[in-house]
Image (cartoon, rainbow, N blue to C red; front, side, top):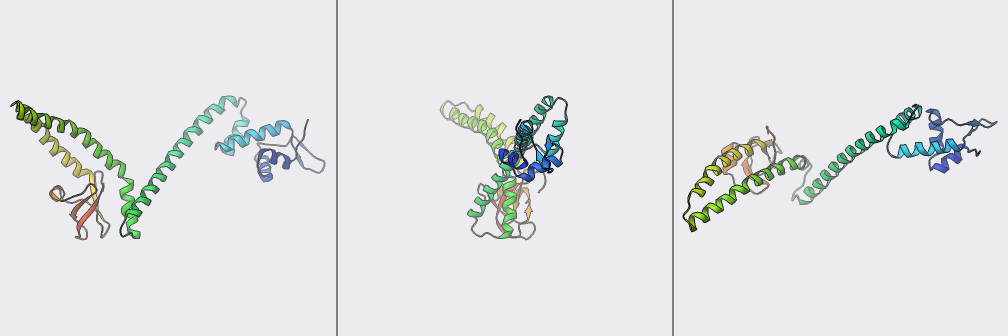
Length: 241
């Protein structure tokens, strides 16, 4: 039977000597023998075990978990559960990393597009980026709900103009007016605006917001904090600004 020193074990598995020694102190890779000089000696079974430990470490299992696994009477019954849990943890971690990368990309784009970038602008950009998905989801819902009404409006106009059938247009009006009122109130309750001067997140009055000139991302409003009047960036406001 072959015997291996600590250095030979480390080289065979691509780890450091200190790592092999650490596994010994943690009780998960005890040498099968000691030389006359007290040096650790390992056999083929130990080498195979070290390879397993290295593999489990590579997929993210902790030393404590690996040690517990080796102490089990039937480790094959435990490893599947451990691997399933580790897979879920890694997927969650990957999702969190992807979200961070997306925010970094959004921030870099916003910084590149900003005409006059300042440190205070980071806060404004962060608010916009963080809630962008929620705001876009609201826009999508509005679009999906509005398309049938637009189709009904077009049909009503055509039928009235070509066939003299007016009741389809009346039906559209009966549906569109309550929808417009409902969505306007819903929209008002779920958006807020960032003042470009004092960087305060605020909510204007419904009347001011409704009649203000606007672009897809901004609206000309008066800040309730500093009184600045100009185009303010629209952000998701939830139920409160």
